[in-house]
Length: 368
Image (tube, rainbow, N blue to C red; front, side, top):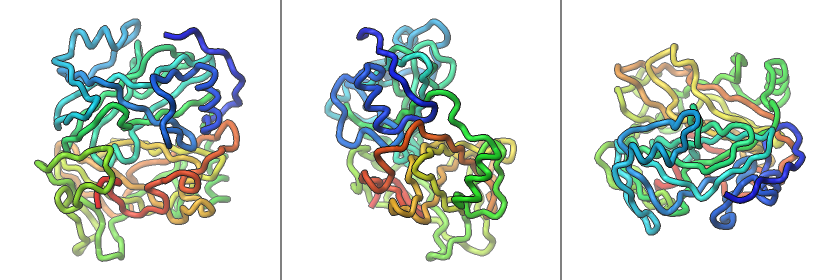
């Protein structure tokens, strides 16, 4: 590992792209290869897969004082060279060293999340670090490698060195908004169109099962499909992989156990330029289902000057164990806002080739 990073000064908040660039320059983020085109997002950094994947017996966390490399010695089945591309099979668990490592200064922590396209492919992806006791959480001052745990659930996927399935967000201090601040932001910016916003630890999002456009309310993933190459947008035909779901009669949907659905929020979301947001699951006690993946929303998502007026949230939903009736307008997730440490140089939709700005019900970029 390279020598310890300098200790730059950062204001409290989530780091925008230019602060992440400074963290790279100061040695807080260590790269095997130079930053790739569009790897820096408005308030996050895409993480790139390395050259090899390890097929493992089961998902794991290393635990205090144990490195991921040490734990891999116990649980790995075999190693796969993915430099030129390889298929990751459904139902199998893989661990892949990433091209990015960290040497974070004191006071800076990070969190990771699947990219939007990853979640919409039903690819269960989490980031692991040495000695951690939780997935996707990188502690204050962490120094060491990063790994992606990957488990395709519905579609087998093709990945290669450099493929980006996860993204990481850096923060200093406590940037999460308090309830009263969130309430004021909601009222001023009309972040969510719902008349009754649940602001207990975030703004509530509900599911839309009453769309007027052709009666289409969502998609159900087909099993036993072909592979999806994660680096080839628009290469897959929708109907080869998805069954469209149209509204018939009552505004409800019965979720089949262990089936994967793409639905949309009833609310249009707005993330102003000086904020970032994260979609997190709603309380699981309300039903036997969950929004399968959380997701980052960068500054500018749904921001009208950045081309995002009317951006809804795509919901990746899976029912557990028993069939479950989902009703139109049922709360299904929540949106947690955080302040940025400084005004961002980039905005989602305006400055990058953003695939999901001004979206409604939309599959991942791989389907055409």
